[in-house]
Image (cartoon, rainbow, N blue to C red; front, side, top):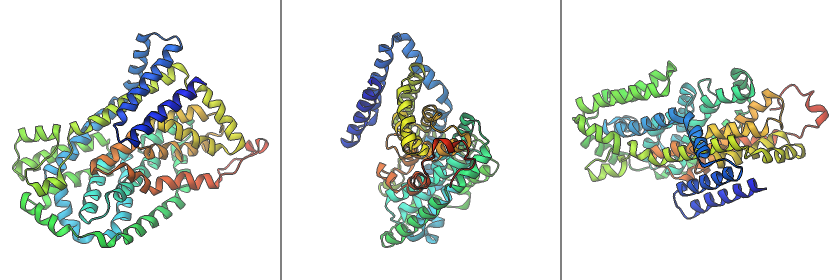
Length: 443
């Protein structure tokens, strides 16, 4: 009972921060305190509790490096004129009527090629977001399309760490899982594409700024095809399926060369931009191009570290064991997917990151659904897509931050909503005697 009470208190703290527009770091720090209190009540010494924190943070070091690289890329693509050049050359070919579905499809394509939502957001997401903003499309709609596209590939790419993690935890073949994921996503994909096209048509009259923006860019930056090299490099290298960190490093080096040789920036200026972001002196340009830098990722890094500390505490104390029994009973009354979905919502709210949400959902529901192939698809259709829909989760924060999209963008991430909804509708409660005989997953 104590576990349920603490989870309720923590959820209330998160909700209070959202409603009062306070930093969720306050709720996360509070959560770390109450969960550490729980560990102390279980008889663990303070030193051991600190060890739990350390054990939770240790696996996420590569993520921290990726976050810093994203901060540098988002700043350098501004400073080198990459984003202005993309907008300058493409603005005349797009309209608000098609930019939302195009954004969804392009981000989906890049995320499939790279297998990473974060890398897609820091590259194609910035490109599409800049074009859409220039066309006058509401930023929350663009953010929703980018969020949907980024996690399209993160869910079903053979390069995806989340897909590999699910396959490893369930002991299944990742390529067989991908076939199942594609089948269960066809209807959500079609419906989401239609919704983005309809939204674009509805807002067709709002775009009017591309001429002015092009004039500002041409006044401040040297616009030429060579400025596009850092962006082209990302796309080309993604075809070779290199690690996203290597692709971003290559793009950063290209940006340094373009910034110095073409835009006339000094090396010392670039070092400052890498840390604090790009903030041009031109007032008009500053309104649309400021941002990026390692310092801009500080809030996200803090969220990652704090939420990862929870993982160490939960694993060492068995905090969620009682919840597991409740989910087993829930699955018997409704369906196994309904139980997995409830677990995914709870764990995503607690974990604040996708990896921990997947691991906790597997831990909680491995006795709810004992058919590995079906269980793997159920995790993909729940924990993997629910985590990006939690406003305080890094799964959504990191994707929306590069284009400064508000949290309400989650409401427009229609593909992510449709995946669990469509699959929940398609599920039927399986009688215990027949569950062992069922050999194929009902799409």
